[in-house]
Length: 101
Image (spheres, helix red, strand yellow):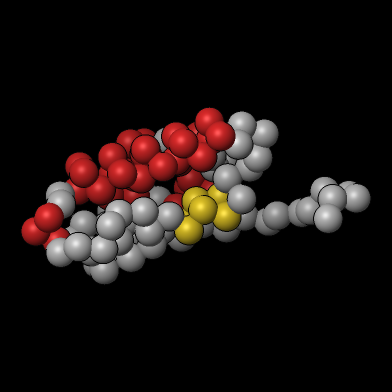
C-alpha cells in the first residue's frame, strides 16, 4: 500500500505545531498497520507532513529522524530505506506477487 500521507488537515501553520503534526501521522500510520496487518505499507511525505507546512527540510535534518521514530515509519522501512529517508528521499523496489491481480 502506498501511503501518501499528507495526513494533517489543511489549515494554517498557526493551528498546529510539529508535535501535533507527528501525532496525526502516527495515528493514521497505527490505524493502517492495525487494519491491514499483512500488507506492506510504503509511506511518503506530503507537503502538510512537515511543520511549517510546505517547507521540507534539507537532507540530514533532525525532522527526518523524528518522523521515522515518532510516527512508526521506522518499522515500515528497511535499514537502507531509512538511511536514504534521513537524507531526504527514499527508494523502494516493489515487486508484485505472482497470480495477484
